[in-house]
Length: 211
Image (cartoon, rainbow, N blue to C red; front, side, top):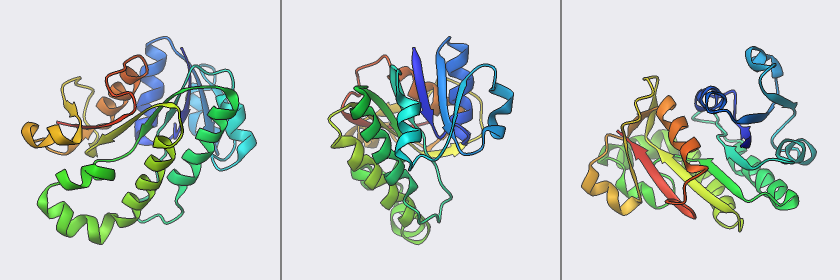
C-alpha cells in the first residue's frame, strides 16, 4: 500500500515509518527538515514543505492509497497546527480523490473528555491541556465533516515502552467497563493506526486506545 504520513518526525511518526516499512508499504512523508529523516532517505519518498501549504500537501498525497495524520505540537502551543494542517490534508485528499484517512487525536478530545480520570478533568486538563484539546477538537471536526473514509484514534498518555500488541480499544461508552489506564506506548499506537488502514471496525468512528 502507498501511504502518506504527516507528522513523521514525531514520536509516533518514527514508529509509523519503521513499522510500515517492515510491513512492505511504500511511504511518502512531508517534513520541514528532511535531515531529520536522513536515516530513511533511501527507503521513503520525502517531500520538503509545510503542512499548512496547499501545494506541498497536494504533492504529498497525490497517487497515495491512504493517508495518516499524526501531527503534533508542544503542550502549550497555540498555533492550531493540528486543525489547520488537517484541514489542508482533507482539502488535498478531496482534490486528489483519495478517501482513506486515519487521524491521531487524543483521549479527552470530543466526547471522550467525560471518561478522563477525575483529576485530569478537574485539574490537569483545565490548567495545562486546554490548548491541546481545543486544537484536537478543531482537527476532529475537520475530519468528521470531510466526507472521507475516516477513523480517529484517541490514545491515552504516550510512553516510550515497547510494541506489545496488547491494549484496550473501543468507543467512548465502552471505556467505563474496561477501566483503561490512559497510557499507551507510541509503538503500540503506531501499530493500531496501521492496522486501521485495512479495517472497517472504526470507520467513521473515534476510538480510544489505552492499556
